[in-house]
Image 1: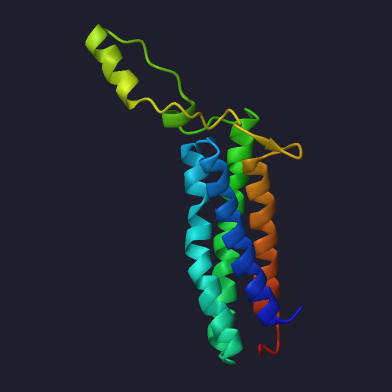
Image 2: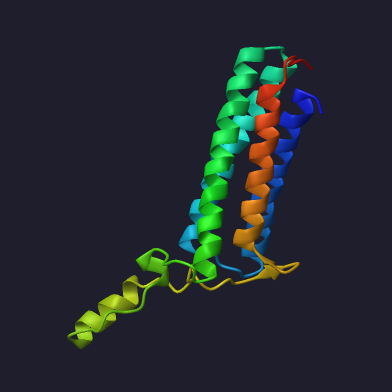
Amino acid sequence: MSARSAALLILVAASATIAGAWGYESLGYIPCDLCLTGRIPYYAGIPIAAATTLAVHRGRAELARAGFFALALLFAAGAALALYHSGVELKLFPGPSDCTGTLAKAASTEEFLQQLQTVKPVRCDEPALFVLGLTLANWNAAISLALAAVAGFGARRRAIRA
C-alpha cells in the first residue's frame, strides 16, 4: 500500500465512520456522552487526513510523515477511549457518573425535580445497539485501532510520493 492509498483510506474510513454514526442517530439511536467523546478523534482526524493526503500528493514527505504520526496518535487515543467505553458497557469498571450513575436520594421534591432536569437519559453502560454482535463502542475500538495501524504504516513509508 502506498502512502497516498494509506492517507486516502484513513480519510474515507474516518468520514464513513462519522457518517454511519450520524445515520444511526437519524434512526433514533441517541449517543451517550462517551459515544460523543469517542467521535472527537474522527472530527480532528478527517481534516488531518485530508491535509496528509494533499501533502503526499504534492511530495511533501516530512509534512506527510508528521500527518501520519499525528493520525496514529489520535486514533490510538480514540481506540483507548473506545476500549474504556466497551469496558464500561461490560460493567468491568465504572463509567462517568453523569451517564452511569444513579440519582442521589433527594432531600426534597424541589431537589428531586432539579435532578430530573440534569440527569441525562442515555446511559454509557447500556449499549443501545449491536451490529453483527458488537456494540458501537466495540466497532469504534476496532476501527480506531485499524486507522492507527494504517497511519503508523504510512508514517514508516520510506518513499512518500503520489
